[in-house]
Length: 154
Image (tube, rainbow, N blue to C red; front, side, top):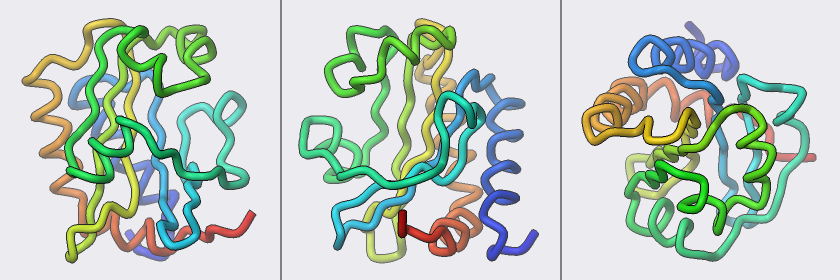
């Protein structure tokens, strides 16, 4: 699999996550920290969550945790993530009531993107989170190359 084919890398990780624990909604977000932009680079639901365009990066508790301290964000109910995700009604409409956002850091420790999995309420047990974090870690070299190949222009 070529690192210059981001979709193939992201799709392979999506399949692996699905096999590992289920992934009702799966997305990959790439960051341009210098420009303060985030771009959805891959999605399992292209109609509901398209990959076109960029949006400004946020500055909130989620950002502090995921981008600042490089810790996964785990929310096992809608109220836990609704304060950060303005699209929580759409997330719920897709049958998702829990969220896991895992940071992907470069060799310097800077978060360059996230792998995001959403599923039914209570889905992200400590065991599932550990397994999914290990999966992302195992795919990290390919993910970093794929994320670097994603164009950030709108």
